[in-house]
Image (cartoon, rainbow over all chains, first blue to last red; front, top):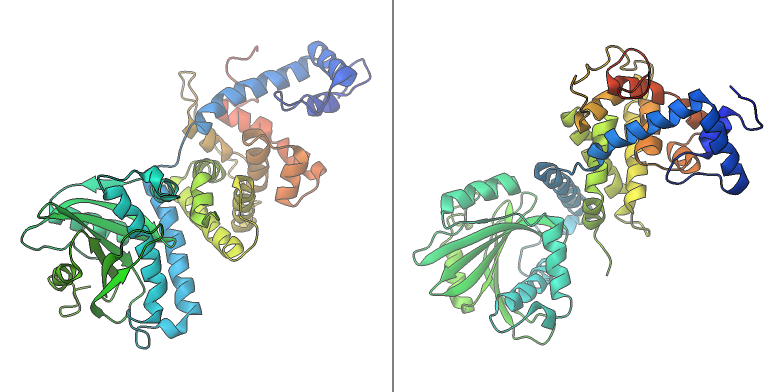
Length: 272
Length: 162
């Protein structure tokens, strides 16, 4: 369709669209705009576009809800688990226990995160003093939308863990051990949970990392030196059939082992 | 510092979610499935690759995932009943997505990239693996989309001069 003038309706519309970034400039743009002013069909076309843009603005303001974000992270976590289960046959539970070299990558990842959180939990240190600490924490929190639960109710924590990890599990329940909070985090790209406890005023972090069904392992103490020249961090790890556990905190490694052994889901009972 | 795929995906999650809603014509269940399928496709494509995916690459992947899933639906365009107008002149995000159901999947994907994402023709055509002439043809269904959005039987937008 054309109107008097050199430019066609199709060319005028294509050249002046989108309105915020027209494809024409200079004399060509002027000619196209003159065409639109004199052509009722083209004028209507651009009026329609403006009205559409206004209605689309609302769609553009929409953000993904929490459950969608978590579903996406769960999808990626499952994909990673399936990949690692298929490409590392030597790590099937029957052949590779948690202790030993196979545990090193997991322990290294956990210990690194422990080092960061250990510093952040210390009253005298600031995240900015530890290179990458603030970035690492922000990465973790941002990736999982910083969802966490502040509660001292073990049943509420158990529901949170079961819902968020997709595995029926529960926090440690030991006399004198008080729950402070629980949150979701990422460990080496895997969706995990962190339960924070207090015992005698000291903070203990319990990591729960879902895994493919595997052999259980009893609590194993490790003292890992995080980066940055900090003191060694005592870590106790153990595995139930579906979850890798790790404890780190302001207690001796013996005390951490004792806590781990008190866990109802430790290998002796195999609740997982 | 290398970013994990999760970080790239979460950085684009809002745009991906909006796109999925539009492409699935407002069906949130199907939109979440499309989003999940897109994320899985991203994992398989980029997890061991060299180039990390930016938001645009993820949007392209979503468009292609949608089209491959809709191949059988190309002729069965949901172009029957137009959604009713809200009657109060307010168009919501849900209305926009529902109106997308008035055009067939290939045209819907083109509208999403060009009209909503405001991509240039060449870029949108490359994403959809078609030439620009075909893209323009698909964009031509814009009037039907607009009519569905207005809830009117003729291609008009409420509020425009009659």
